[in-house]
Amino acid sequence: TFYMSTNGGLYDKSCTQPWVELDFEIMGNQAGAESKIWTNMLRGTCQENWAWITVPFDVSADYHTYAFDITTDSISWLVDGVAYRTVATDGFPDAHAAAQSSSFKEFISVWGKSSAEAGEGIP
Image (cartoon, rainbow, N blue to C red; front, side, top):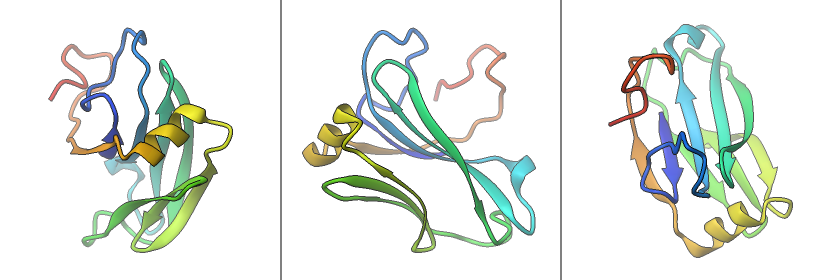
């Protein structure tokens, strides 16, 4: 998982404190000649705005560059310089404010457990 968050990087399972998080999640079982990557914009108190993107290569076969392009009115998910998803932020005031304030911090994590297992999501 490659992501940016305004809450210190931990998922608040209680969903009581608002935050904004932008995610790329690479799942091994989705890698192949065409790979699917989970993207998400979490905001508010656990409100998800997710979408799968498909890239025309095996994400596990080589190094790739994952980036967010944050402008005054949108957020894009880029892989190797190509935008695969863009979301306008005018309908998401908290995400728009986070993008404009530079309050995001970068994180990377490796998940080896399912959400049903104890300790999932804890670095």
